[in-house]
Structure formats: structure tokens, C-alpha cells
Amino acid sequence: MVLGTDNRILTLALARMADALGNSFLIIVLPLYIASGQISLAGIVGTSVFGLVLQTETLIGLVLSLFGLLNSFGQPFTGRASDRTGRRRIFVLVGLVLFAVGSAAYPFLTSYWTVLGARALQGVGAAFTIPATVALVNDYATSDAERGGNFGVFNTFRLIGFGFGPIIAGVVITGGLASRNVVTYTLFGSTFSGFTAAFAVAVLGAVVSFALVFLLITDPPEAANAASKNLSIAIRNPNGRGLDSVFVLGIGTFLMATTIALFATLEGPIRMRLDESTFMFSVQFAAVVIANVAFQVPIGRASDRFGRRPFVVAGFVVLIPSVFAQGVVTDPWLMLLARFVQGIGVALVFAPSLALAGDLAGERGSGTTLSVLTMAFGLGVAAGPLASGLLFNFGGFSTPFTVGAGLAVVALVLTYTQVEETLDA
Image 1 (cartoon, one colour):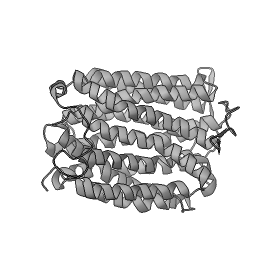
Image 2: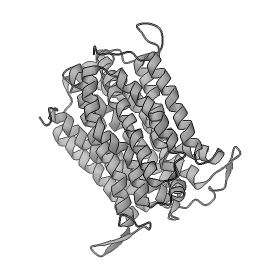
Image 3: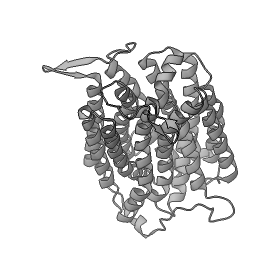
């Protein structure tokens, strides 16, 4: 046991950290790769679709969004399948293999459509991996009083990979902290670009995750018992009026994740507006996750003691101004501050939401119940870049962030009026 946490939770957390590092690399690398000229956009950029003239930012948003769409829509099916079979581990391993294959393919692709296909393969892989991993974390909790802490630890390690991956990616691609040009490496007489090096790191992350899960994780008996439970997903509250708490938390998680993902598509406009380097943009992107790393564990454990709902409500209150500010600031350091504050809001929402859903999963099956939140997060990550590109086209720089702040208001109202507490404070 380390820091009072089950070593199996730590193993899953380390595996997810390695995998998340590889995925976050691609969030920074793919927009640069597509815009670099190495991927042909001939016959696509400038094309009008339903009156919308496609720009590079819109195409980048589609690539980033496709991963989340396939990931998210697949999760309820893989989550339920892992409940019915009582086997989580094999789902995690299959998903990691698919993600690694997609990452390894990128250096050999030259057309936009093949890049879209590789990202789609990775989205399917994530649909296998994510709900099964989160269900394992929930299955390993011996009581409700430690569930928030377990999810806090798991999310912290996952977010270390996801948060620091973009910073490392910026260094790997450009070969330095302040450089704005893609570097070329020479190793054992072979020359390759910073893009290829970044894709190799993404593959390595999936391989490390696979090894940890294959060697150290087994399916718990609780997973096998889930096959006899009601595995349906409720929309209305079965105990009274209003909407089901897990369903509402899923909506809130979707809206929260959408606000996080608005940023990535606008890398070019943001760097131009703030006159900053790729590295500074990477730090700003990572600031949301760095704040999560700092606050996930204490917030998760506090939710075990004081209840889940107050933290979720407070998180949406913090999200509203921090998202709006990103559309109006003109200084790189103020943008960094806004992103960090947004990360605090995300930390307040995420671990307590997972813990609250986990409290209710005993009656419904961990894979099925928690897939509502993991699916919602993936959908938000998918919708955010695409919405950002479209809103940027239709409006201006501030439009995506103004709309994002409005989404946080909707999430706050729904959570405050519909979500019920599962623990006695």
C-alpha cells in the first residue's frame, strides 16, 4: 500500500498515466502535423459543405473529434459487455493494442483521409480501454468511504500523463523550450523528424500500459457478479421526480469536457493573438490538467468525508468565469492563469462525480453505470474541438469560449436542481 491506496489502484493509475501521455502527445502533434504540409489537404480545404467553407482548423477539429465520438459512443456497449462477461482486463488490453497500432501508422500516412482512419482506430481502442479501467477502480473499492480517494488517485496519475504529455510533446517536436520549428533527429545513422519521435513516444506509452495491466492486474470477483444485475441506464429518477443523478452527472461531465477541449483546435489563432511559442501554448493547454493533478486527491478524499454534491456544484461555479476569460485575455500569462483556474473547477467536478456514480453502481453494474460518465467525457472532448472550429468560423476568437461559459451555466443549474447526495456528511 502506498499513501493509503490499494496497490492495484496504483498499478491501474500508472498504466493509465502512460497511455494518457501518449494520447495527449497526439492532441498537440496532430494539429501541427496536419498543418505542416506533410499531409495532403488538396481538394478538401476551401470546399463548401452546406454553405460552410472548410478551413484547416475545421479539418483539425474533425480529426480530434472523431477519436472522442467513436470512443464515447462505443463505451456503453463495451462497458456493458465487461459487466456481462465479468472480464475487464481483456477489454483494456485489446484497446491498448488498437491505440498502439494507430500511433505507429501516422509516420507512414500522407493523406488527410488516412490520418482520419488511424484516429478512428484509436477511438475504437479507447472505447475498449476506458470504461473497463474505471470499472476496475470502482470494483477494487472495499467501501464507499474510500471510493472518492481511489478515483482521486487514479485521476491524478492519469492527468499527470495527460497534462505533462503536451509539454514534453512541444519539446520533442521542436527540440527546445522556445523554438517554433520542427527539429530533425539522427539516431544510429537514421534521420527522422520530431513528428516521428512524438508518434514513437505515443506507441511506447501504450506498450508500457499493456505490460503493467498484463502482468499485474486480474479481474475481481465483483465484476463477475455484475452479470446478474440490471444493466440498463436510467434517465428519470427511479425513486422520485426529476432526472436520474447519474444521467445528470453525465450531462454535466459532457459540458465540462467540451469547455476543456475548446482550446486545442485554436492553437494557431491563440499563438498569433498572444504572440507565443509552441511550448507556451503547450503549457497553457496542460495547465488545466496540472491543476487537476494538484487537487484531485484532496478533493476526492474530502468528498468521502463531506459528501459529493457540494464539490460538483462548486466546480461548475468556478468553470463559468475561467472559461469566459480565455476568450478575452491578450496576455500569455493571463491565459495560463485562466486555464489553471479552469483546472481547479474540473477537479472539483470530476472525482466527486465518479465517486457518486460509483456509490450507485452497486445496484446497476460498474461498467454500465460509470460508462455514462466516461462516455460523456469522451463526447465532450470530441465535441469541443469541432464546436470550437465551427464557432470560430461563424463568429470570432471569443465566440467558442463565450458559448463554453454558457454551457457551464447550464451544467450548474442541472446539477444544483437534479443531483442527489449519496453520502451523509
